[in-house]
Image (cartoon, rainbow, N blue to C red; front, side, top):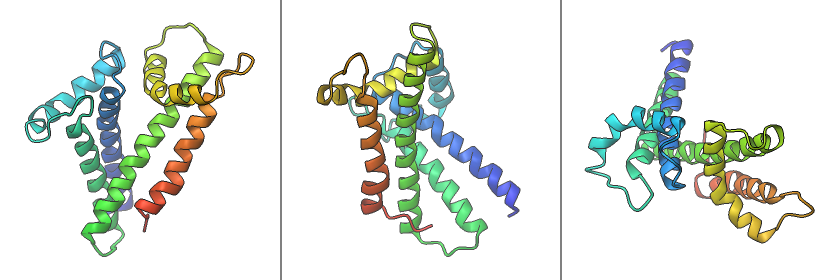
Length: 183
């Protein structure tokens, strides 16, 4: 397969995984589904997730069907990459690498949400923006425990630093120990 075609197909699969992970995370953090961004994600993912939920039902606020679809999209992207590079196919490697990609993307979504909420609080505090509200709703479950550890000091909220540090530790050390990356 040609490199541009592999790149385009892998890009489309990773964007597909991102949309399903947004759906998973929006439900996990109990974000408002009346937000235009959330409504769009639900509208895009519902045709695929509705039949899949009969096999993988949600548990409380965890939608396993959307996580599974993100993992499958990452799995297809890894298979495509391995096939294009003529690497030997190893099922355990493919499952491991695609799970690591999926979990990395979850961490990256949390990091992006934290950074967007920080920037919006500095640049446009009090301004209504659907994307900023979603970013705050995604970041808040990580920032609230960090605020209990380190309360605001002189008007500065340092909880994002604790949350970002914890996410980096998970991403670069815990994942490496549990899911070694071999590519």
